[in-house]
Length: 86
Image 1 (tube, rainbow, N blue to C red):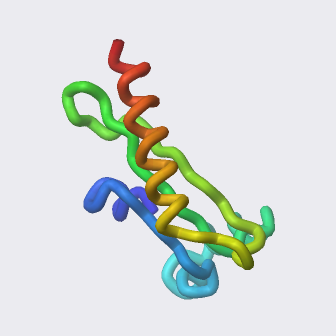
Image 2 (cartoon, rainbow, N blue to C red; image 1 turned 90 degrees about the vertical axis):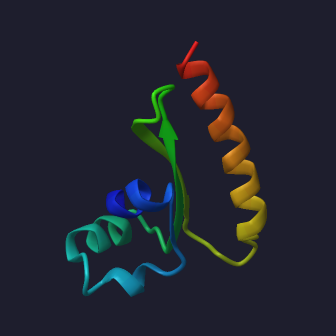
């Protein structure tokens, strides 16, 4: 996840089963918390260093509209970065 955030600024795991073989520890962590899908976006400092991330974890994907989630989280990310860089 961190490498994807560093490279792309976002990380979206549509189905945690897809990471089972690649990252067993992270897979088990997500499964232990009942997470079946997740969307993360990096938060940057004013000098463009990644200082953290905001994540939305899904335990039920029945009504998930990933485009709406993306828009909402990106909007909140901008507000968080602005507040952190005051």
